[in-house]
Amino acid sequence: MRACVLHVSLTVALVPPVARPPSHVCSGAAYDYCIQSLGCTAVAAGKAERGLLPNIAESLTRTQIDCVCDWLQSSLDLSDAELKKVILWAPSLLGYSVEKNIAPKLEWLQNYLDLDEGQLRKIVLRQPTLLGRNMAPKLEWVQRRLDLDNAQLKKMVVTSPSLLSISIEDKIEPNLDWLQTRLDLDAPELRKMVLSHPPLLYYSVEDNLEPKLNFLEEELGLPVSEVRASIVTGPNRLSYSLNKRYRARLEVCRAAGVDAYPVLSYSSQTDAEFCKRAGVPLEALRAAQEDV
Image (cartoon, rainbow, N blue to C red):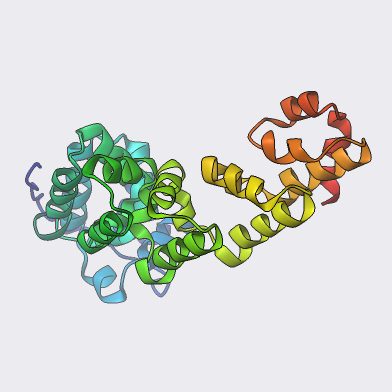
């Protein structure tokens, strides 16, 4: 990781007073940087500055901000647009220390998961808030709970970096327990499902997973064992919309007198391909999707 190079502090106002919003909204170095260097709108710049703790926003200097952003851009090979995306998503980064916080965390993550530069860059772009988190306990817990080897853990994080921002207690552990109990999974089955579709760890059980499973088991007229087998072997089936995909497709199948099994078996197919295979009109499916 490159060391941070400090810049000479500016002593004049960076934005003319007439260009600033009222001081009670935002008027600090973070706002100036977002406007001048990132090309943000006043609204976006104000939102970014409000994403900082008040005491940090007030004391932050342009020199500190330049240090952080220059380091991030050069170390991760970010374009101007990518740097803007990172800062607007995680403005709290502007108040972090490169030497004490950002660089050590990135170095630890890269070493722990054996990431190349491209993989590290991809993870930060997709989940920049990870730079403010202690990632070690979470990764160690997930690896132990699912009995993952290092390569499997790496694949999971690279595929779904948002896992690094999800709470173990509030989401990951309850989801794993629910999946294992609800589908009567043994440890290898649970591991295989999560590795195949990591978002299972943060989907809402109440609003997403449970309603879909109930629908598939109760509405399709298929044996519960068949539904279970389909979900275990293709857990991404739980990512599709209950209404727009499952309910609408079941409705057109019933209207056409077609067996309902394609609703689950062909769930990964596009609407056009599904209708072709199931033998139902695409126009009817489009109409059903508008009604649900």
